[in-house]
Length: 87
Image (cartoon, rainbow, N blue to C red):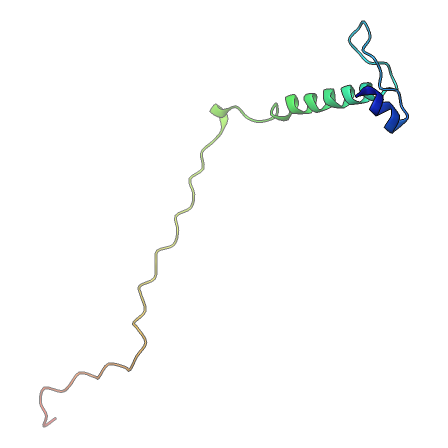
């Protein structure tokens, strides 16, 4: 794999030293440094968040009361009839 990386990039892949690090300027060192940066960002991501015991619960607002249903469309109802036809 290291040979392929060197052939494709023209940059030495790098061998791990006694200190566990790759030499500066190698592909493997750049990869190692990038992974360390990702790990640090992941560790610090949640540090600013409040603890679960500090989180306040907020009640959602109540929805408005529903409107009464509208009468179905159609011809208007006949007006009430006068009980005394003489008027």
